Length: 133
Ligand code: THU
Image (cartoon, rainbow, N blue to C red; front, side, top):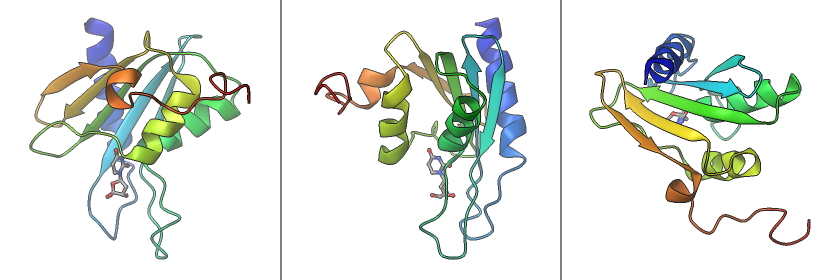
């Protein structure tokens, strides 16, 4: 679990960079690639609202654009009473790159952590290999 604590700490650091002037809801993510590199992401809001990008997607986009496509773990943190749970759009984006071996850690700033995986978060995900895409 030591590695996981490090990843959660990285997600908290990412949360510090959140740009959330509209919701004031700060989220941080840290994505551990198969290479060992960690990609941090935060939510980045927009005055037009719909261009807002969540912390999880920021981390995935950073990783994939750096050539990393395989992952070991993802930590997500917010200042919520319960642990944060990713939105539906992010779950679909994670389904593009994660199998159930990828550990997903949902946490809050108070130290609560829930360990889960993709098929728990998005059962029956629409994926390219299922439909020959
Ligand atoms: N948000 C995330 O970054 N990740 C989640 O898992 C849920 C929601 C962001 C989007 C928006 O900036 C703010 O939280 C409120 O919805």
